[in-house]
View (cartoon, helix red, strand yellow):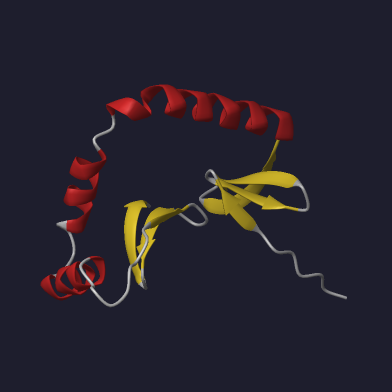
Length: 113
């Protein structure tokens, strides 16, 4: 009987059944390698601490402007309409599942791929 395993991607690791995996390459072939959970958790903790300490130096408007300028004219017009809608208020929300992005209505703004 074949077992289906569901993976979750978080902080550049794949997680399944409480174990952390990362993509490696061996002889030119991709493989999943188990990573020590304790080391991953320490790494995540350090990254979060660094992020807390340097986030005040981040100019969010500049970052978002650079990203939004990569949109096509059609998508830019659509996002502008969503953000300036008088009928319905859309709240931007940071999403962190497969990549870091923001969702405004049904529009996705990719921040980190």
